[in-house]
Structures are given as structure tokens and as C-alpha cells.
Length: 443
Image (cartoon, rainbow, N blue to C red; front, side):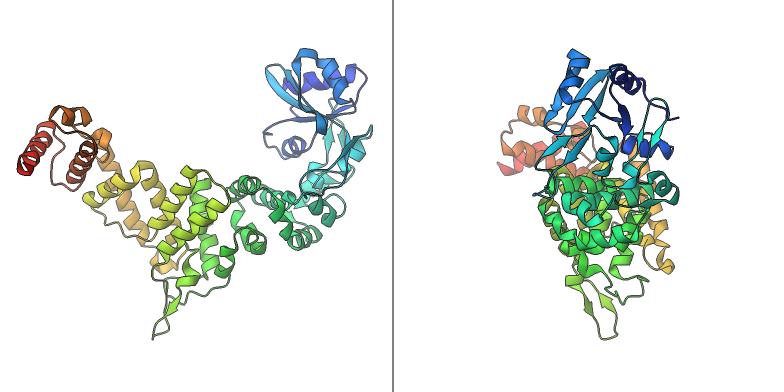
């Protein structure tokens, strides 16, 4: 018996009491059978949308009536209720051009993407599983319902959804399904980049993200072709025991499953192929790859229409991943001044993952990163000054001294740089005296 929320039970009971069939369906059934907590619960019913609206009255809202969906408020929660339906053709490879309603649950389940998502569960504990999704759950396998070419041709986003489920659930992709999604990968060009972005970040945060990237690089190359030259590129360098792509995948596995970190690590060496040179001793080098990777990362994230904050943060981490930050208080303060605490912590995480994906003989760099973290914690514990809001003087102080306009911001930046570089102490009178002295010398 699935542990359904009270709101879902209420909706099912009311539909059944009115003479309709009603089932929990899709991902909530899959996750509950796996012992996972579903993100949301969807209900499918034989009731037509207008019948659902009439039954629940003021608690029902027509959020997607054109697709048979009504949102019902019950027990202070929202439950999506969708009428059994059949889909027409998919001319845009994303949404059906037309739909028609049916009284058959099995016909509704037959239009769904994967067998593990094509199961329905009733209030009385009955499982309806016409496509053997429960067996595929036990096997840890993702398999399309029916013909995979048809399923991916209908909705190309299912290609990434399949790989996302594989990465997050740790499931393998059934052979015919995997071959089909590779054949149909070009259809991803018809999908809105915002939808690709959403699926990609979830995929990257999965425990098996590296495994999926390794198995299907050509799929990701549809929207990010810059990744493909990394595959199989021998680095020919003693620091590296993997080619560029394998190094990247090991680094992805070594960093925390957060979208910003995983994306930064995935793209940190994307500029290497265009920077590859071999010296007279046969040793490979990638001079300037950090800056090239930074520029490519910016372009790639713009292409997916990522938010400005996400794009700038990932690009900054890629830009800094190969920079040496000496393990001194002054250098860490400088890094804090530029990056801030959150991004400096992220950078250290990226550097750790990058190092752990190199040859084990060079893993001693982890101790250097440990030292950097120790200094960071010490500076934070001492409330070291590395931002304008921590500075002992502010714009009002400078305004009272006669400064105005851009000169105020410029002066504050100069004072902060001096404090960070140990040239001045962060003491109000010392800073004000420095400003007075500077002003006098400019008269």
C-alpha cells in the first residue's frame, strides 16, 4: 500500500464516490514503489474535465483543460487531476497537436514515456501495470512504452528525461531504448533550450551523472558540440592518467551534486582541445586553456539561456580553476575580495575535484587546498575585512569630507584594496587620515 497524502486520498475518494475511476499515476507511483518520497502526486481519472470541475466546485481550477488537467485544492494542497486521454500527432516533437479523451486507463498508460512511469495505483491498493514497469523497477531499467522511435519522435525531451532518470535513479537504459535515443538525438534541436537546461541540471546532480555522460556524449553534443572534441583526447602529460573527457567525468563525480559546481567542473577544461600543443619531449600542454574555457563556457550557457547569476558564477569558477592562489592570508584575502566567501568555497571544491581526477601521484595538492581552507576559516573567524560593507568607513563619511560622485566609490575601493593587501589597518581614524592626506596632496 502506498503512503498517499491525505489530499490525494480525498480527491480519489470523491471521484470514486461520484462513480468515476481514479488512480495515482506516473512518477509518484514509481518513486513510492522505490521507497522515495514523490515530489508531487498526479491523479488520472475517467471523469471529463467539466465533470471534475463540477464535482469539486470552487476548489477546482482549470489550469490545463485543453490537455484534460484540472488542479484541485484539498487539505491545503494542490493535486493535478487529468482525464484519461489519447494523444494525436506531435508535429513539433514536444506537444500533441490534438488530444481526445478515453474511458480506458490502459489506453492512457499506453501513451506514456517509460514503463516505470506507466503504472497506476488505486485507493484500494490495486496496481495497474500493463507494460511491466514494476519488473523494470526491480531490474533497474528504463524502457520505452512500445516503439522507442515513436516515443522519442513524439516528444524529443524524453531523450534527456531518460538520461536524467538514469543518472538520478541509477538505472540502466534498455538496449533498444538507448539505440533509439541516439538515433533521434537531433530532434533535441526542436526543444526549447530552457527545457533542455532544466533537465540537464537535474541530470548533472544525479549520482550516475558521469556514467550517463560517458555513455552518451553524442546526445549532449547536439546542444553543446564543444564537448565532443574532449572525448578521447590524450593529454600526453604525467599529471594526467585520463584523456580530457575521462578526466572531466572523474572530476564531475568528485564534486558535490550541486548544479553550479557540477556544471563548472563539466566545462572547466572545455577549452583544452583548441589549446593542445606537444613540446619537443612529447609532453602535452594546454597553455591558456583557462581563459578559452571561460569564454566557451559563457557562450554555451548563453545558448541555454541560463540566468545571468548562474552563468556568471559558473564562468568565474571556470576562469579561476587553474589559477594558483598562494596559501597565505594576503592571497586568500585577495581572493575573498574578488570572489566572496561563497564562490571561494566553490572554487576550492572545483580545484579539489580537478586534482582528484588527475594522476594519483599528484593528489598531494589536496593538502594545499586543506591549508587554503584553514586560512579561510581563520580569516572569517577573525572577521577579516574583504568587502566594502566590512570597511570601517562608508560613503557618508567621505561625503562629509567633501568627496562626491564617482570619487566616493573609487576611494572606498582604494581603501579596501589597501586593507586587503595589509597596507592599512581597517580602523576608522587611520582610513580617514589616509583620505585626508590623499586629498591634500591632490590640491
